[in-house]
Length: 215
Image (cartoon, rainbow, N blue to C red):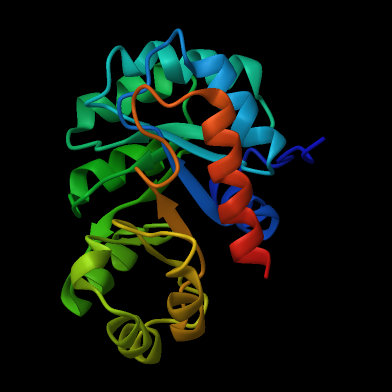
């Protein structure tokens, strides 16, 4: 069984999750009916970071189900763009807020509610601004335009403890180069889960990612 994330303090909870397995499962398109089986496939593989993007069908219902079934995991939402959405995710039990962009108001709202917040950035200016606002880590998005060389350059100037997490087009084969450049973890999208994919298929993909990361 995956160890529980004991801390209610967001920074500590995020640090615990990152220490266990710093891979965020991005379940874009997940339905509430699929959530229990897909969640089980992920958690049984070692995942403790799970996000349901808000442009999925009934995302708050899926988040609530995942939170109830896997209280030890750090579950929340992706594609969070507005302060009201932060409040809705919190009300559903979510503790994680991930955005494709850096919106200071969204970061502040998440921090005020004791949630882990990972805004999306693509430049040093955005990265430093997001850290100054209190972001717990940085989603490097889209990774297709942020090469390992760019990650290495960011790592050279950002605080050493900053969690840099490339997201977008990440596959088991591309993990190693980004890790060598200084990536702390990754957000995994369609290579891990896509609408219509069975729990068994997600389990197989999850295990490939875990093996590639730990190798």
